[in-house]
Amino acid sequence: MISSEETLPAGGSLSSLSAKYLRTRTATLALCENLLPEDFVVQSMPDASPAKWHLAHVTWFFERFLLEEFAPGYRRFNDDFHYIFNSYYYSVGEMHKRADRGMLTRPPVSEVLAYRRHVDEAMQQLLSGRDEGDIRQRVILGINHEQQHQELLLTDLKHLFSLNPAKPAVNPALKIPPAADASVHDYVAGVAGIREIGAYGEGFRFDNELPRHRVLMHEYRIGSRGITNGEYLQFIRDGAYAKADLWLSDGWSKVQARGWNRPLYWNEACDAEFTLGGERELDLDAPVTHVSYYEADAFARWAGARLPAEQEWELAAASEDVCGNFVETGFWHPVASPAGGRRFFGDNWEWTASSYGPYPGFRPLPGSLGEYNGKFMCNQMVVRGGSCVTAEEHIRPSYRSFFYPDARWQFLGIRLAKDGAG
Image 1 (cartoon, rainbow, N blue to C red):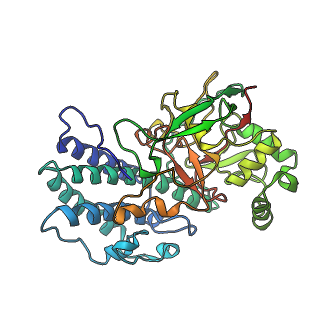
Image 2: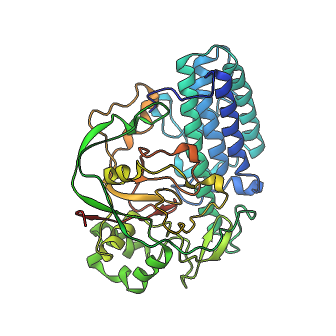
Image 3: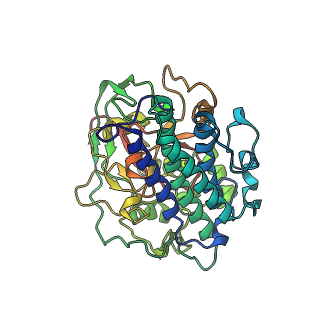
């Protein structure tokens, strides 16, 4: 999951890494500053986890994979936590059933926060000691793991709050994006021939981004921006949710079984949507979000296009700066692309047409940490680019995330592609 050391500030000392560790841990708590104690406990669906569980699980990760292995004399905060807050690391022990995490009224939030302080103090002692490569790499991995859970924390809270008929805001102080017209949508020629994809150079990367390898690219064109709410509304008004010929068989079954007729969080009139800042008027120029792979694929068929393969997406994005609407921007929702913009990063994770699987020559890490990515390489689809609740430093062109094709609660959007040079 990690293949090279993080590039640190001058000196590259563990003290620099310690500061980054504390910034990450502080950022997680800052996301929760507007929550009430009751908000931390409830689980809205099996795919989501309570906020309290996220706060404790990322702490358990540092305790189990760093303190218990590299800090002689460290004593666990609570032995029960090893079972309660493990997620899917079966090689280190059993865990509480995921779908029942919302039943954990105990430990209380106050004890989870005390647990975080206990582990943070021990981690600071560990990082004040000798600079060893194994410690450094595990800490960098833990930081990236916590950044992933920062995003999950917000998307899980959004789903939970959306079920409240009062439509409360997770953060009422979020910035309202300024009005802007979406840039003109066109198609940009991609690179053809034998190319390379995958992570390269120094810095952190997950194991599923490796090894870097060659791919044969046929001529293609890729959308200059993501599809907007207004464009998706045309798809709805054309009756697309009732046209079976637009849908994959599994997608059509989901539409029928679940009654899908618009993106998750849109109201019935399709003129407002629920956001982390509460319910707001639908911005027709902002990228559409919270759509499944099935909906993205159906939209592409309706538009006379297709979804890009992940290698097409990566090669098109590789020449662009990693900048955009990330969690630090303070909107926590997709915003309209500026005129002439070709933004590949932020706003939404974008569905690709690629199944999530190993690159040629892929090898997971040995031991328990090898459970992080490799065992999920089945029945999921690759998404690219990060979202409006992703940490900016967490994203790079080679980053591969993945979701089941019926997932909608994450910030998931659409970019189109076409065959040929145009």
